[in-house]
Length: 65
Image (cartoon, rainbow, N blue to C red; front, side, top):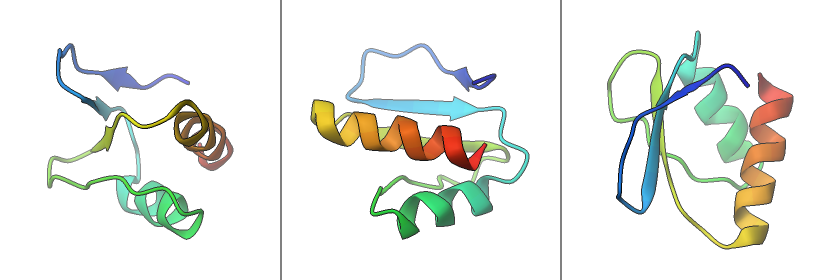
């Protein structure tokens, strides 16, 4: 999708490369997907979830991008 996930061993993915993270955050939220805007320009953070939750996140994100 052209995004830049940060290397991590945590239970979340911190990713950048977003031109408008607020719009992506709002679109995900409106679709029932909770992500965090941690205040770093162009980045969001999503916590690992179930396979179904991850599929919804990826599908919704792909649509929004």
